[in-house]
Image (tube, rainbow, N blue to C red):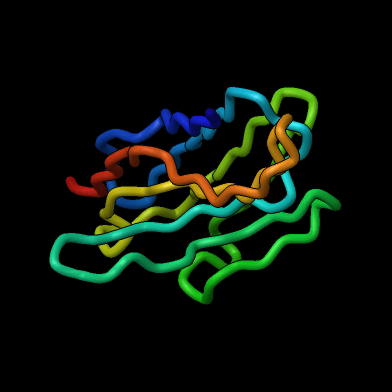
Length: 120
């Protein structure tokens, strides 16, 4: 079984920064792609950024220029550095990964989410 655990959320003032982490555990042969999504209250879950195993990144427009996604393949961990946060960034942030397991199954896995609140 593969699990993703997010951490690093919390309360931050407008203009501040946070760094989210997503650690994968379990029987993992490879992390094929990973991404961050967010869901604000009453809204749908939206893409924030993705990163492939070859470190190719993609950002949604609200994240461009402010957020940076990165990964540490050796640790099966992904990060999201968020700068210049504003109240519109308030949401539960979820990490997602497409992994190949030790049983050679390909799975899409979600973390439980971490809350980011941007408020003065």
